[in-house]
Length: 174
Image (tube, rainbow, N blue to C red; front, side, top):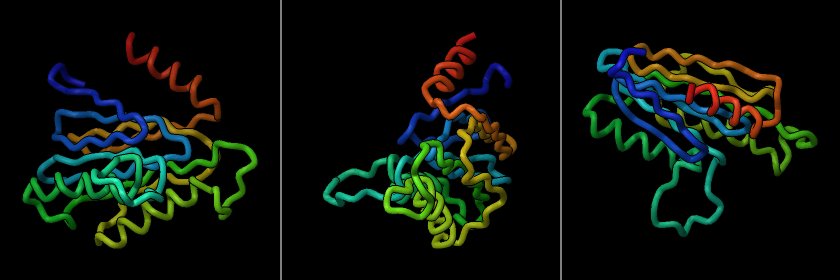
């Protein structure tokens, strides 16, 4: 990372859209991140959503906490760029079943719902998925380099998310 590069850390519900001088990081459990990147303009974004969709639709503002709304927030930035959406590359990460006792495809299966939403969104928007790392049981540390479009994922076997988060914060301050 050069001195002019900016490192952004996304917390759950955050999203970011920027240029080649940014690296975006996050820590995922059952949450999902979708990255969008334009290879010629070297701009793009990443969201970190907690749930596939909002159950109470009365809210007046969009929230990055929900997959469908996080994508709408990023789409607004894509439209502002003036570049065709279909020229952006999509990558999908996350959706781990980190909580013991939650069975797949059950009503409270948040990871599967989040993964399904990611697939639904990219299909509806006609985006091509260039890479994915979804499911499993391991939390993931994710880093997205907007200069190259590369997404690095490190899976950890430690399902104690608070301990991983504390370790990550300690490392980034050093």
